Amino acid sequence: MMSTSAWAALSFALAGACFLAGYRLGDDNRGAQCEQLIQSQERQRAQEAAAALAKAQEAAFVAAQSLTAQRAAASQRLKEARREINRLAAGRECLSGALRVRISDAAAGATDNLPEGPGAAARAAAEPASDPGHGIASTDADVAAWALDVASAYDECRARIDAIRQWDQVTHGR
Image (cartoon, rainbow, N blue to C red; front, side, top):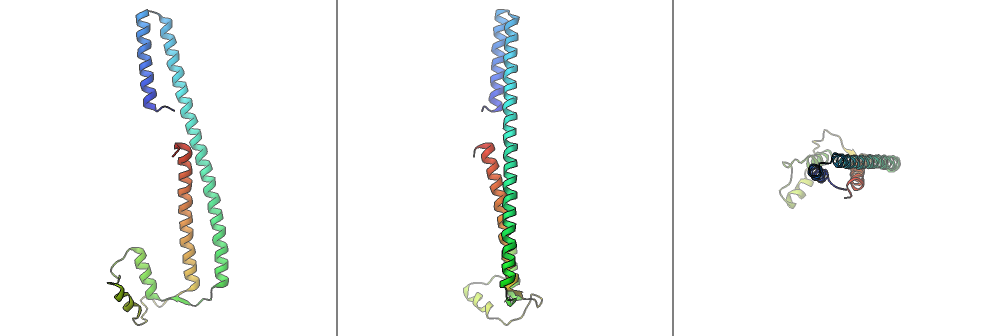
């Protein structure tokens, strides 16, 4: 399929050739034929653009359906996993408040609580059990639920990227 600029250049060149041919021959009929040819090419270009748009819209519809199906499957897997976690979790303390705060800071990009090196990390682990996490400890069920939330967010992101990739492949052949 030719680009818009290529079509414009071809139309312009054809119009110039038709004008010169009609002028040179003094034939009004030839000028009308050239005009019809130009109009025919413009109609063809419009039809090709409409076909490309329809193809892109169909690809977007298929990608949206795929995304919806992937979301439903991920949601079902998540429900089943949550049920199994609730059955298996003992409710015992898993993460102290200090460890939770440290993990949260690391996830947020905070670097002021980072240990200096491996020795500092070992010393940090051996500190008294003061709980800057407001006295709340996470249970094994909390940690499992957090892991499922992370997995769900990842699946959602991956499904969206797959849908975009699918649409781009259909519409642009990439």
